[in-house]
Image (cartoon, rainbow, N blue to C red; front, top):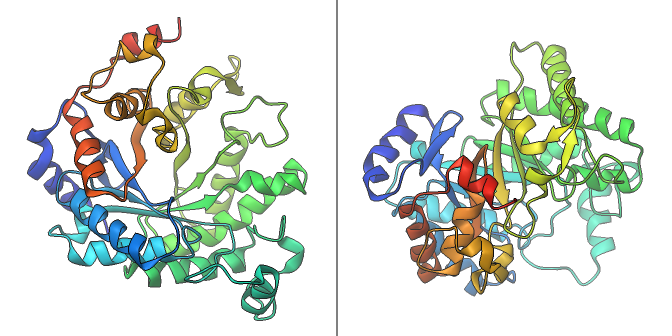
Length: 362
């Protein structure tokens, strides 16, 4: 498990190689502001080996924030991360490991009959109630989340997951009303609070795509104040002093800056952006799609590009994402050792200051 001593020791080992604010606070200590993601790629042995090499290299060169999910590549990404953790010349206590649950995962490969697979592997054993499924593939039911935490611990080969995200909870809004989804979150949070009290997760969060970057009237909008209220209530129900909701993961890049520009979160003084509300609430923000799943590695809008530091477009795109106020880590998918080297080097350049970042949007 990541510890304060372990993550600060990692920062002491690598910090002099990077620019200012490269390492940032993230429970329980600090983590790199460039993180490695493991989403893309086919579920094959070849891609497994690429990810193991990439994650191992990243950990040994200044990236100590690793993100995955149980459904990524049919559980293979979690297993590749676990193998890299065992191989890398770093202490487990120095690495923040995050994963997600919510989508029903395949195992090793895509089955010929996905519906039959879900019925046999999840419904018939009682792991998931079919009534809780949205689009036949997503559930936030406590029993399902509980089983997925166990499976992720096994896949990763760890005794604790540092941050466990509920994956795309706004998917539930496709078939349920908003208040019902908030109550689903509360019951899922209660389960995660119990796993946190048992020491099996360090904290939890929401990994979203739409929920926190769309306006209030959008069908997949979620209110961050309402979510935090459910976390507080869950902690009270379980009997712990402070809730464990610690992070949001959401898309953010040059072309998807909605979490900064859209004032969607209500306050007594009027609506504010998700980034502002998260910062004021003490939540860490982790950005996904930081280089647009590779699209921004080719080109960035010229007016923005001119304001950014970095030798390559990919480095400048990463530095845009991690320059946003309130962002802790910007994730970049990496399964090439060469890309790891390029993306790690983005951290040797200083991010934009707050004034310079604001100027981009004027």
